[in-house]
Length: 184
Image 1 (cartoon, rainbow, N blue to C red):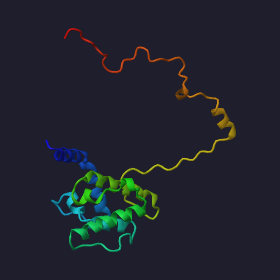
Image 2 (cartoon, helix red, strand yellow):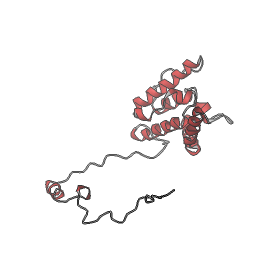
Image 3 (cartoon, rainbow, N blue to C red):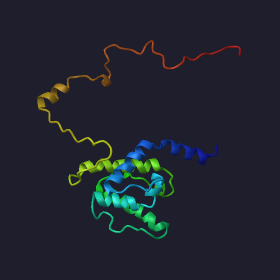
Image 4 (cartoon, rainbow, N blue to C red):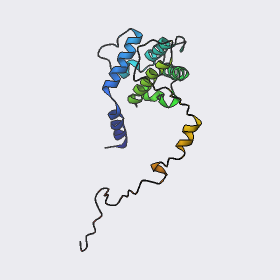
């Protein structure tokens, strides 16, 4: 099998149809319109117009001009505008897919992950009342300890500090032992 085929197979195996369906339903609910029947999820969002409409529903005015016609560069501009808008909305750079991942369908799983990152980010915006996509992100749990409690913690020797109360690894086997066969 050629290297290109192996890469394509690996990327295709990362796709999760349940997640894609969940992301599609989330987009349809927010936009109030169903995807055309018989069209694949990635084909509907490929030109970026649906994605730009989505971020404009979440935060109005995020993408002021959505290109609905023109060449491929105009459509790729939609994707770039969507990416810039979700970064401004709060989605971390590391969670944002590359334009070619969607336009050339190189990594649709990453596109879906970006939509889930956007869905998680909506929890942090009080002006958005739902629907949400994905689990609610954890919030900081700040703790204030008294000086007495902090000093008491200094007297405890943690197991990672080198004391494990006499336990050893004697008798443990990790995997098969080495066997040396003479005369073969």
